[in-house]
Length: 371
Image (tube, rainbow, N blue to C red; front, side):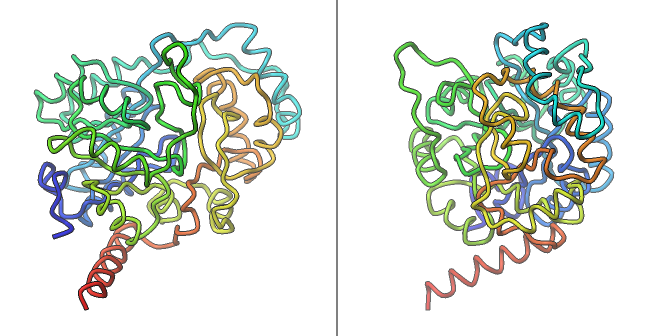
């Protein structure tokens, strides 16, 4: 009975398990297809990708699986920050020594624009009729949501508070992913809290909400008609069962998949994950200007203490070359090592086998309770 939820019925999938859409390399068509073929919902994080690359990824995933999968994009901020000389100078000064250490010139290469046009990205999702379209960092435009839904696409979006969840549903989003503070990678927050989005005058900042507190609050607020996916710090069958008990319709796991052979995780990153026990993760704006959770390293120690990191996506764009050079040099100390607090649960196993193990763990717990 635990497998029968509003989400599994909506999507026609067997297991209430979703792989996190991890942009920037870890998400691959092979990983998404493996999760979907094992009965869950595989996901691709393509927020940084061009329309041509998004189309190619969709078609590559379809070639590997007949099951449903998700394509996830980033909603741009209402007022994008400027890529001006002041911001460039700030980042140059922040990372000058780190760039020199990698043999890069101190002067930063400055791109013509901060991001790929969001409308061009979403147009591909509509044209390709993707099974599931997901969004993070904001409320997707209502007309985009409507166009996707008219195509038969199920629309997901990420919330880190009840207020955000309600805003997403008001725009027509069908499934809300409630992302707790334990989650690895970027926080999807877009209303107040950690300063990554607007908030009403006089509203206290507060702390990021943990998964165990957030999930039941969102479930209760949205009621019976909106499936909720729980995310943040989940690592195994116990985690999946716990959030289902809280009222979630599925569990989303990301860090747990980073060491699978299907993931695009580079070798220094894999080694750092294997050595981690969960106590090393920190929330930092150092790599992108937006709060994200990852393993602490030399880059975080050098840049993360600064209060003047330019906002996302300025810092992300201007540090891209440095992070790529660190990966090419096989160095984990100067690249982003996104990981959630459940990092110790990650295993060197194929994705499909992981899902099978989690199912076995859940069944064993339920059998123990029944005996």
